[in-house]
Image (tube, rainbow, N blue to C red; front, side, top):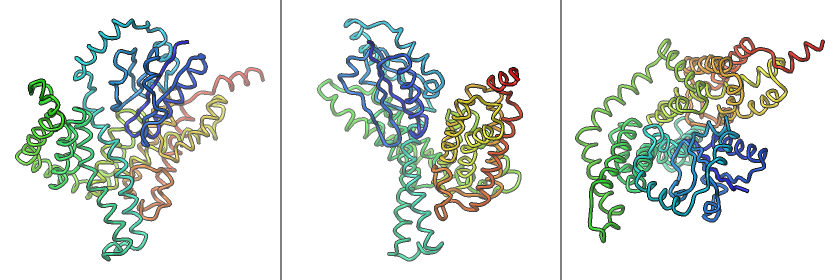
Length: 464
């Protein structure tokens, strides 16, 4: 029997990672195929693949949207796809890898050599590098936001009393927030240039943080440091007996030097000015401007339910938390909750529109929805995209715009309905809950209006 392996990883490591793993596992069992899946989620790698398993494997499926260690699979049959493809068509992926021919020893050696030559060309561009930085930044945002929110439990001004518990909670949360931009920049650079890019990326991010260039400065610093380190790595040659000092001395030193000087002389001041203008505009937004921003962010959250568009809106909102701008985060989370919640409601009020399997999936979608896992809507959207996706976009756009109009503010980037019960994590909490509820109802109504009766309902009517 051919042995297959898989690795799943999404930028946030919360939902797509495990949904893809489950889909692949179920498809393999249905085909009676041996498959082991390593998940690389927010808590790190689980069910890790061993060297022996990799050696014996016929092929490996990499369903990933962020960086994973691919060196260990050199010379093996590998299919690389996004996590969404593993969720939508796991059976097709398994069929593809099963059809791959076994590699001879000579082919194995040749592929290893080719892989090494192509290492720099295998990078997957801006989105992948950005999401790698965001995924490492999110735990700091969550921890810092919750600690700051908890400090307000003792009173809005309690943190001003030096030495008090509220003061230490605020200081600890602030320390986590101060690391957000350096970590974002550091791991963008790490994604581009591997370990040699980490130090210059962290330093560039720290410089951006010091001049209040915000997440935009951190993104620029990360890409600058990463590509500078990559260029030095590629073109700066030393004698073979000195190659060992390249990753620990030559690349970090020169990449950090160049990144730092460029940040000081060229980048920091104009980017800080841009961020200052953006922050002032966002903080002063009311009425139509707030409505439009919420509408756009909300719609983006539902278009691809965890894909690049969704993650772009999410990354924008998370980045603004570092600048203490919390409104867009509230809009994004509300809009991300309504697709699965709206579909659950639709399965309750219009059962004839859905098969028995979809009605059961609706119950699971309700749990995913309240947990801010937008991917819970994917099975419904995949089955009927032309009717379901516009409905989801409409409901999410309404939820996002209402959250902005109600001036709701959210200090943490995840948690779903559960953060509503944490004092001061969300402002205007009742109106915020109302925005989520209205978005859910709008989604459900559009789904019910657009979808047709399920084949099971049509068959029952015919029998009558």
